[in-house]
Every structure is written in structure tokens, then in C-alpha cells.
Image (cartoon, rainbow, N blue to C red; front, side):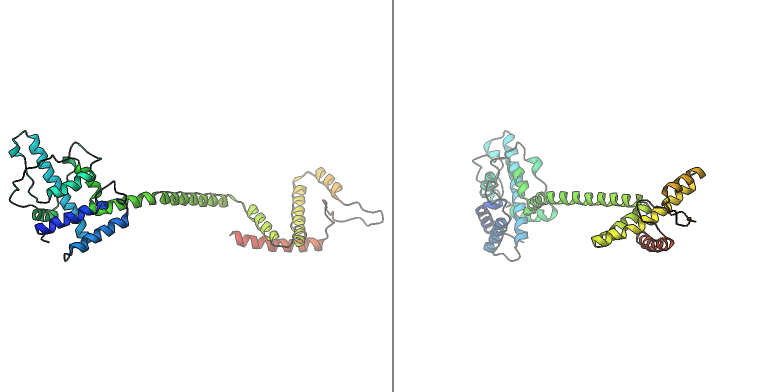
Length: 305
């Protein structure tokens, strides 16, 4: 896109009016909405076909690069110690106008060298740079030295404002991302601990939890009554285990202690009945209890497997 000298000067003039685009001390320098509005206003006032916000940002970047290159040439010519007539004169008409912008935007951040901050233009930019350079140099000599600190601050404003917006977005999202990551790690650890704990639970513990959960679902009175059946069955098998493991004398003593006292008129009992703080059980009661417990055990086994 060809630019005339008048169009370029007009563009620099409009750009200088929008301090939020280049002046770091401006209150709106970091205001994304204000910067966007300023860019759109320049585009509308330029009125060039095919010239939008994207082209505007590229134009600003190219003009800054061109200015820095010209300023470096001036600085080197002054350091060479030549005559005033030998000092390099920039070949772009808008250099002095752009100098005011660059000096204002970097007044607080001066640096000793400008060379390390200037990046060579790309192939696409080179063609546009050539449009900005006028072949015949201006006869006017520079009256004031150019501050060599422009590119350091400008490099932060360049890259079409996208870099700054990304840094701001990154700083805002950094804390929520860390918090989300911490919560995710905590959930994984909790799930791992739960898995390890569930693997270490024995069948008896699982059955006990099932019984407890089942009792919790019953009314209080029914829950108390239902506790008797498993207690009686467990009592029965514990006593059988004790009888089998004890010696004959210990078994006889245990039978005598746990057997209920018989009246003189009662016939002798043929099978000992055991009772520990519970009513005497008959065969029908035990059979009914065994059937109830077997049903509970079957349900628990299905749930745990």
C-alpha cells in the first residue's frame, strides 16, 4: 500500500494525538478499550481503503523501527567527531514530528545503547520501509541530539498491543489457574487414599458397614429389635468355637457355668443351651435367626462384590 508524504505526515499527527497509544504515563495507556477506540478513530479519520486496525498497528511498528534506525545513524555520526556538516541528516520528512512522540514516551527510561533494542525489519516490512525513505536528503541539519533511549520503552509498546494484553490476561489468570491445579491435585490424592482404604477393608468390615447402614434406615425401635438376631447367631458360633478349642475339662466347666439352672421337677436337659445376657434359645429361634442372617450376608456379599 503506497503512502504519500502528506498521508504519512497526517498519520503521525493523528498518532501523536492519541497519547494512550504511546505515552506510558497516560492514565489510559493500559486501558484496552481506550486504546482500541483510539486505533479505530485513526483508521476512520485516515479514510484509506484497505487500511484497518491491523494495518495501523503494523504501520506504527514500522515507523518506530525506521525512526530508531535513523536515530542510530545520527548518534554514530556525532560520535565519530566529524564536522557539523558531516552529521547525518535523516531522510524521512516526519522524523522531527515522530521525535517528539518518541522522546515523550521514553523520558523516564533512558538507556545508554539503542543498538541492542533495534530488530532488523522482516522482508514484508522492508518494502514498506522503503516507501518511507525519501531518496534526496533534507538540507536541514539537526539542532538537538536525539535521545538514544527510545527503543527500549517502545519495544514494550510494539507488537500491536497484543503482547501487553496477553501479559495482563496472564497475570489475571495466573492465580485462578494455580488454585484450580491445587484443587485438582487434592482431589486426586483424596481419591487415591479412598481407593487404598477400600482395598484394605476386610469382608467382615464391609459386612459390618452394610449392617450399620441397614439399621440406620430403620425406625429406632425396629433397629433395636433387629440387632438381636445377628447378636444371637454370632454368640452361638463364638461359643462353638470356644468349645472346640478348649480342653475337655475347660469345656465341662464352661458348660456348667453357662447352662441355665434347672428346677428339681424339670427333666434333665439333653442338649446344653447357652445364654449370655439373652433369653434361652430353642432350635426354631436359632433356625429363624440363621435364615435371616443368611439373607443379610447374601445381600452384603452382592454389594461388596
